[in-house]
Image (cartoon, rainbow, N blue to C red; front, side, top):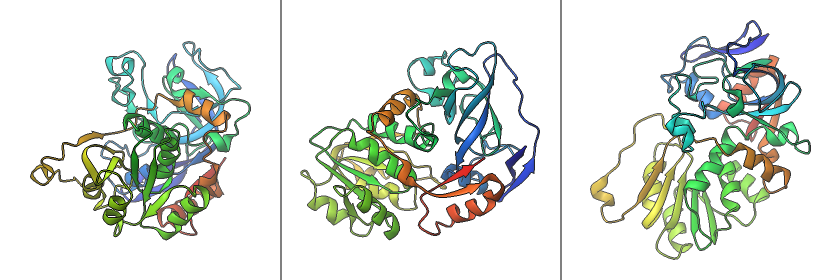
Length: 344
């Protein structure tokens, strides 16, 4: 089968690989029907993910059809349409039992697919711990509607959940890329008093304006004055940092009112400075780290009910055979791209 493969830092390549086989009782083989490219894939390409293993098939955003399951898999069966979770987790260790599945202590726990083991930018993928890692897609939900459930939509849902958003809050989301928009959609479910999105790209601001007209928009240059004018207590009650750019971490804590929550979802290329003397007295609560993707079943229910729709994010489609062009488009942010669907 064709598989998009991490060769070395700075180089991915479409290669021929054998179809994956079951390796354990809790494995499943999924025939991928639709995949996507994530910014985290670019982080691997740029050498920002030291755990990434050269030679693996990249990709961790996908949906497909279960083709084969191990003897220990009971949650899904061959023929089921499924979402694939970005995280691999055993469901039994301390962290899994407490919902912190990103910190699963299994040797393959955490972000494995497309990073440490073969992922889904290929015709087939082997999913370990399939009882936890696969969720059946309701019949009324299309592959396109479900495509982002296992990764960026799970991230947005998790970010909104841990941010403790209340109805009287002003919520600032920094970044209107794909994960930022998913975070926005999930924050909207909480019905806060105000939602502000800060985004430097005019194209992405236009996208938010066209699809979510009640959301307030600003730029990094105007953000400080805009947030102060559009909040009740001198800053945002909740700030969610999704951009991961050079100055956005500092922007996040500066835009927060005293005693606010600052949730950092972004993955940075470089270490960030926490200038405690400068923020002393603001009494901020920081919540950081990778997504705990344990809400996929709930997210699929919300999609089926029409309360979340991420299909507008799919702006381009490419076949797997032309995935190089898809990566060039996505990496260079050409032609107003938000997300690319890769068809198998």
